[in-house]
Length: 165
Image 1 (spheres, one colour):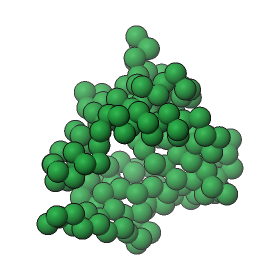
Image 2 (cartoon, one colour):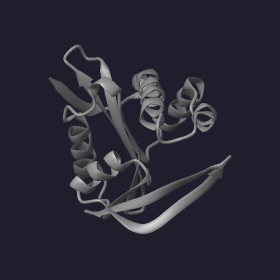
Image 3 (cartoon, one colour):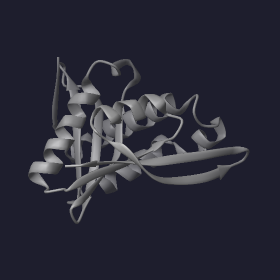
Image 4 (cartoon, one colour):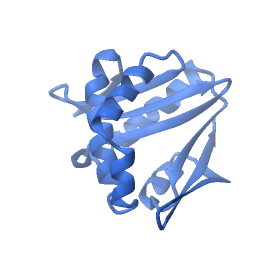
């Protein structure tokens, strides 16, 4: 049994730990290890979430288990009437249980009903096929925009996916 609630400042440490652990697990076979080590540290995630979570334009929802332990989160920010999902992470052992779907539904409802967003978009690693498939189930489609980064011998490409609300 899991429930979804709006995150608050007391959730910073849990969110940072999930972000760190899940990021490592998610990208272990998709990004070079040196890149992952450079881009993902627990202290960096703690500092980031201490700044991001209190912002009025950021909306973050967390998933908790029956013991009230945080197991995942989704976060988006609003700019004008467009909203960007910036993070959706679950601890690896809680993936494929429907929790990501619950988190996404919470964000979609909040963005459309409470924050009057006309569309949602997100960036996803082009090689992260499971994430792309997940987003497509919610009606997100690639709009052809991409961001390319060269790192050592690797070409890292993120694609933008958009959903009208």
